Image 1 (cartoon, one colour):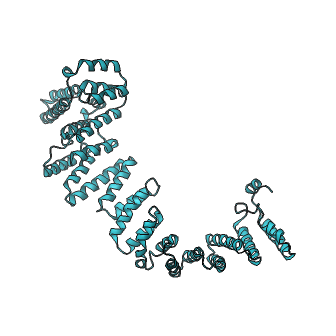
Image 2: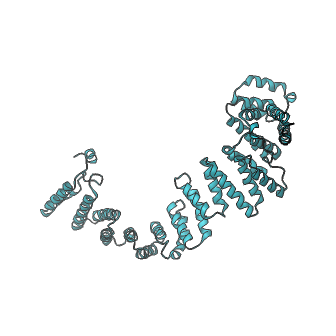
Image 3: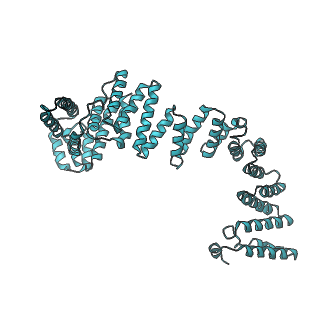
Length: 468
């Protein structure tokens, strides 16, 4: 039977039993070569025969090689036999197989480890731990044994193995299981400082794996007073674009830093919350109070929120293209319509109008007007037409030119591209110690759209630079 055929069609237990019977006949007749050929038949592979048949076959092979004095082959088959028996839950038989193999190689510590593993897997933790400790005394660098000892000791004298952890982790800096077992030990005996260090390391090791999400949430739940875990939760939520969870984690971070007296960080996370809820009077008030404590200028989100009817796609488009007149005219019209019927609304609208005018002036002051644009630059603008790539290069040469900026914004197809450009400008302003310009841009964007959540990574840079 060919090898391909054997993998396609399983071999029956009856067939294996018949092979074993024939091998007995050949052996009893002194035909050792024929016996070996029958038992080592290439068709009798683990993927073609059942587990019970494999156990029978390995038992016969190990017995045959024991009698013929072929020690290495006997031990090899006993190891395979013991592993299959252990995986099947037959720990007594597995220990006998490994024990027999150890008689052939009494100095082989790996066989001693296999026996200890069977004992711990069977549930006899005290005896298993004693065997593992004996093995580690013989070879302190036997990391598989140390890992199993840590795993098994969580509920049985964990304090007796804690001394093994630092060196074991030093030798296995990327072994996630070893870190998890060590974490269990530290938390079981109440060594929280070491447990926190292990958890921070595990977050790094788990990056990109399916287990990261649940582990980060566990860390933030168990240690709500540790900002590094709340920050990991925030990053996790941001990467998954789960903005409800982003908002929750930012609120937790802001509250934690407020309790700890870290006013600057509390302000930072409060302003990030405002990116997701720009109309929240509570958050605007809180940001204002925190800034007052720090003696800082007004927040980029510290503004009177326009009524919802004044915010629409065309307003956002107009602002992003440096055309403020449409929005300002819209507010002016609203003021006129409500002067007689609703004086309070008109007062609110007037404050909004003044705020818009100031913001317009702040932005325009940062860029050159038409009159100061060199003739040669106008020629370049004409030649580039609507090519975004070429206009981007031109803007890098003339970063304060309003005509170039306006042409570049007009060449972009989506509002996302335009917002990203404005944020890039704000980042450059922040890094150049020009927080007023950066804040003016953030204020414009916050007044023009309800949710800037997807742009948080860039805005974090701006806020971080401005609050240093």
